Image (tube, rainbow, N blue to C red; front, side, top):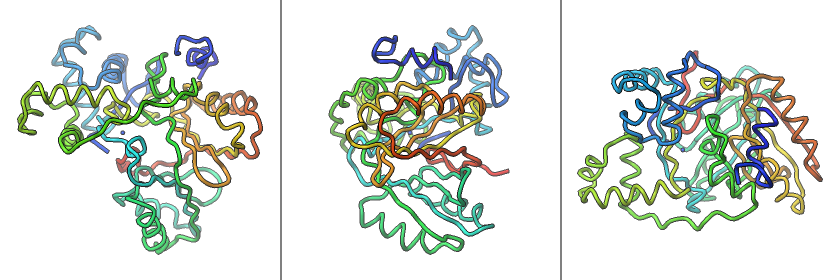
Length: 350
């Protein structure tokens, strides 16, 4: 990412002030075999995943049938998908944990595939460094987390050691990574400004049923949503608008960063003293390359992921950004070598 683009996310003077069905968004270049029209379509749907084909077609200067055919092709081959999910961290439901699983030599691939098949895991990847498989998982509570780590993951053949950390605060998610836009999302803006997110909505059974329908088909018509929910269209439309306006629902276009022209993905852990934590969060949140950031328990308090066009971009990012962080006691960076699961989707392995 360029310094100019990073400046546009700067809350001190710039212009800036989730499991489902399968999708994507991207930068100015092409990636993953997508052409300019594909990217134009994804740019519109990145901003509004439920935009009608007529609206998308008008924006890109193509026929509706062409837009529909292009989108069908991109979703059918798995390059893009639509994700609809309530975010448990924002609703204060369950426990999210970041797990590092140390594997015996020759067993990394096998263990990663097994972990990706678990319903509780949301992401599974292998990075440079030690023979670790990194896992993000969601458990109903601390007892369920202990059972999962000790009696399920701990008993897998090839697992040598496990390190766990609980996510204490969710700051940025993939929904806040906006390669098509210069403006930060509302969530990123709060992180940059150091302000607290609004109190989450009270989500009831009807809301959850609506989200489940969107998980199956994020672009399901309001008429059908109302019919499936046995409510009037006005009620369905109002409920949907209320949820989509809130940070507790992630209704978004999803694609691997490589498809969008960002094939280099990095993972970093930073040890930051509590007195420096807020300023570190604000500085990191200004970086458009950052697509995930959490505060965790344990010796390293910040865990983040970033996406880059090439390794030089990554090196410039770390040299520029980490040098500006005050009081950092430890820094650990790694490049992702293979992703087995992302946003709840198992990634096909060649």
